[in-house]
Length: 130
Image (cartoon, rainbow, N blue to C red; front, side, top):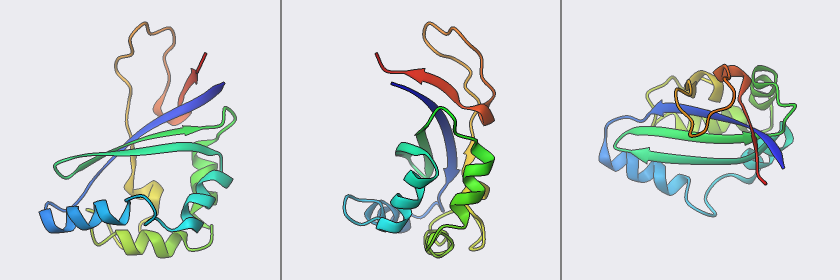
């Protein structure tokens, strides 16, 4: 199966109590179903978020025809998305009115084992599971 991969980062407020709350909000069964549904509708196949201290790292796998900017604009207009972004902004180093695209910054890939191609962050990395 072929897919595109995007990697993003964001900072949380450096407050251990808020960070623990943020983890609980994202724990299994606690995320808002409409948010997950909206992500799938715009072409996000899978997403993982990792935490180190107050830095978040996201791996976002998408369909091969995924257009990042178009999808992020569409996602921002999905039901409850603005409400979710305002809700989680209390944990993040961001504004309450910021969209997910404003908050999550694309990361440049600088190394891949057995690298065959180069990709701009905005284009995603074309990947394949064999």
